[in-house]
Amino acid sequence: MKIISLFNNKGGVGKSTLCYHLGCALGEMGKKVLLVDLDPQCNLTISAMDEEELHAIWKEEDKYIDDFEAAIKADGLDCILEKPRSIHFLLKPAEDGLDELSELPPTVKVNSNVSLIPGRLSLHKYENKLSERWSGLYQSDNLSIRTIINIRRICEKYNSIKNYDYILIDTSPSLGILNKVIISTVDGFLIPALPDMFSMYGIRNIGNSLEQWQNEFNTIYQLISSVKRKKFPQKFVQFLGYTIYNAKKQSKNLNSYDLAQAHYSYVKAMPSIIDKFIKPSNRVNCEDIMEPIGGVAVMYSHNTFPSVAQALKCPMWLVPETYAEYEKKGLDTLVEKPNSGHYRKYKETLDEYITFAQDLLLRTEAL
Image (cartoon, rainbow, N blue to C red):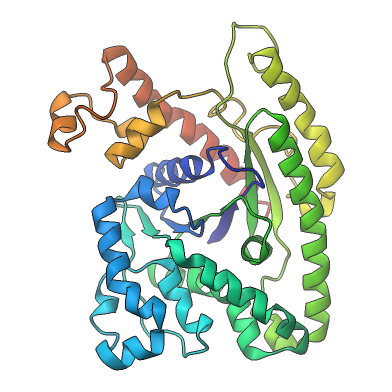
């Protein structure tokens, strides 16, 4: 099992859309996948499940998020653990300094091979606790270590039950302590990027932060016992590569990626930015590391396709062809219905995402 995060210090790059469709494509390939939404905006969760179902999960959890210990005394844990719970609920015992859950709740079933641990808007509370306890790592404090490593521990615990092939973690665009902990304790990460200046600066910031985070964790590892060191990953996170998302395609043979010139100029500059700011020791050993993952497979804009798919709670290749499906979901006046030509293009996105996923899997083999 590999734990992979999608991360960029730039919002609006299609990170959650890519995470959801990558997970579903891996599922189509027969891989068992767990999606974990650690972005407080919850876009991955909203792509994968009905909002009313999500609101019901949050409402049932509210008293536990407010005061976990008091809620246990009042209502216990048996009933609340019978249904899927948010990632913040699962992190709450460590946040409040209580014993970990002896049993884990079920995950949300996305399809036969893909499941989800939903996000929650209140996740900032856990980030605040990470900040409070960070200094305790240098004193080898048990609760601090448990709080910092808890996201990985939860992933590994679910894996021990469900035997996943991949766990994909969606993150916010922040370089704050929550993402420092996530990125520093997963196995690998990839950067979704737009072909623009802001994404290039995002990669620079990530590279600089990555070096700083690694130095901090190396210092901590020297100060804690070998037994406690085993709770952390053996190897620091590896950069798996980047992908260009939502780029404008132009006429054939314009350049190597058939991109509009303004977009191509940024894409062409990406390898030099990566080479300068992400150290070779932090990159996975792959000869194509400077090439976009999957080449042009998911590079070009899908226009409104992702929005239609999100409204229907399905990947783009499963958008229904008949209008009856839209009417059944009450979406007949809210989203664009595909005509026959569009519908074929929706279906073709599966091959594109499988090409992307296959390249990513080759890179994860070197982790």
